[in-house]
Length: 321
Image 1 (tube, rainbow, N blue to C red):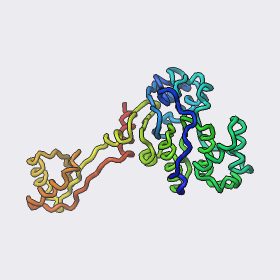
Image 2 (cartoon, rainbow, N blue to C red):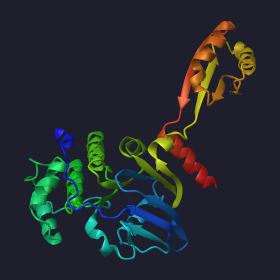
Image 3 (tube, one colour):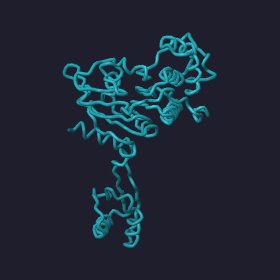
Image 4 (cartoon, rainbow, N blue to C red):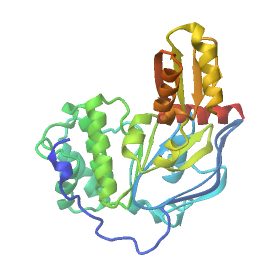
């Protein structure tokens, strides 16, 4: 993005007068015949910042978002958005902006005229259009036809449309789908700035790196069930690490194992190398041990799980259960 994103974003004109969480779900379930798309989901999303709804394709992310927006009704359970029950979406829709699936605009109208049409339908003053165009960095391209926009520009225009009502809560379903790396970075930076401006951004994605880069908090689901809820840092703290140790001479493997055992370092051996789980911080110590015992190491490597590794381990465990 350009320097526009470093400027102050428009703040909410009517700050919330309550302390209700942005989203509350209690036993929320959605069934389609024998298929359980969302399974007894209970979670709470506090206000402010960027919250990622993470899960593999088919995990139930879009179904959850559709229930929050009143597009489909749950089979069981309850939910509240900004303090109002999801069975009465009209009570809170004026406080929500949303992007669900791919954005669709009138291709022969300019970006500005597309926003003006939406503003008229929502009873919003035209002055708000300039504000949201600046927020999404489309000022200067707003008089181009929407049909000539790149996919990234269309996504930004869609987010501008979601911001027209100056909502407290912005719900985005896979906003980086189909974007090239530059477009993904643009949308990521925009979401971060919106969160810093006091909005609550609830964004679904299966792109783990983007969730890690943009989100303060994460909700991980798989097969419609909750796998993890908490801060991104807390999720990363569940990562495992190990020290991979390979002697230069295979004959030294058993001697190296004895040295590590005597030093109290637990390890796993597979006949070629040694793996010491949760021991990556001891790399220097292990290196000295080997050297002092005349063992030359061909490889000494710390393997630490990233968000993708943690996610796969958690979701695979959930699937196995």
